[in-house]
Image (cartoon, rainbow, N blue to C red; front, side):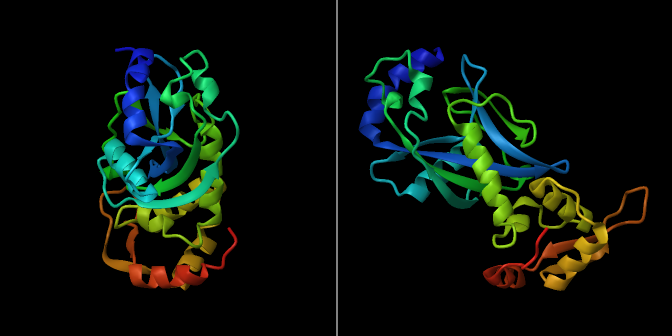
Length: 248
């Protein structure tokens, strides 16, 4: 079924199932190959990509709706989720459906609640919904053509992530459990979009006392085997209460 036929066919059911005028859009961040990624879905019969999102059930809490939508798209539960902004601009989504019937559910004015999510890239198994032909990770620095105002939402989420780098468990949720110091530094550089001094970064991270050094090293490289670390969640959480107090 074409996207147009499908969206019209699902309109009546949406009126019955969902709360009108409120939608949810999730900026799902992952980290892979030293780059910060965003998970996007590609609409059927279109070159436009969108953020994973949808609508809130009439008997559903907002956070529950966001978690449900993310589980449906990623196959991962208990994702770190942070609400960051409500987008309420007039006609933020209606023009996308300009040539559809005025009674279409999706053509109503929607205020969307933006969440950003932090996931372990290796654990995600992207699953497209029935309106999408594809779902894939994209480098935040090389985003494809995005529909509606989803490029704007993504940009705002990235700004928020940068501001909260010292106050939220970003590294804990984007990196695997065990990692090297260069991998941690590359994560910070990818988020901040700038290079950091290796020695200064190491000293700052060790001074926070939020990392446990593992007894083993990573084997298999051509150079000296790097040390391995993991976050000490108790000390990390305590440190984030007041912020890491560092400008990057």
